[in-house]
Length: 184
Image 1 (cartoon, rainbow, N blue to C red):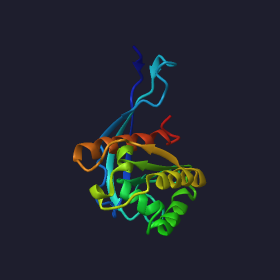
Image 2: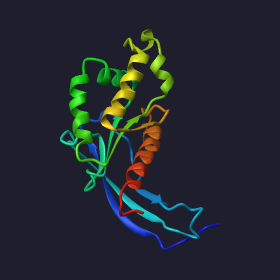
Image 3: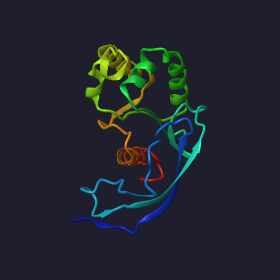
Image 4: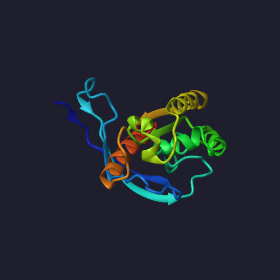
C-alpha cells in the first residue's frame, strides 16, 4: 500500500462557455494522484479547490478550459449525434471548421469530447427527426481528428441528467488537470 506525501493544495477555476445549454457540472474539490503509484512508495497527491466561472469562450473555440491554462488544454464537447452531424456534415460545418481552427491555435492539448453512446449514431431518423448518415459522420469525425490533431474521447453516456453531467465533468476536469505541467 503506497504512503502518501503531504498533499499540495492548489486552486483552479474552470471556465465554461456561456453558450452551453446543459453545462457539465464540476466537483468543488478534486484529489489528483498524477504519479504512477506502482513506481513510487510515496505518491504525490494534489488537492484542488475548484471554482467555476461562466464566460464567452468563442475567442478560443472551446466549451471548457482552465483559467490561465488556455494554451495547455481546451475541450470542445458534443452532446448528441445530431449536433455532431450538424457540425461535421450538415448545415453548421463551415462555422464548426472555423471553431476548430480557434480550438487548436496555440493549444498543446485540444480535446474533442463526445458524451453520448456510440450506438446512438445508428438510431433511426424516425426516433430523432434527423436523418444521420452514421458512416459519413464517422469518416468526417476521424478526418477532423487527424487534420486538427485533436485528442478524441467518447464517454459513452448521455449527459442530460445531473448525475451524468457531474461524472463527465469530473472526467473532463481530471483530464485537463493531468495536462498542467505544474501538477506533476
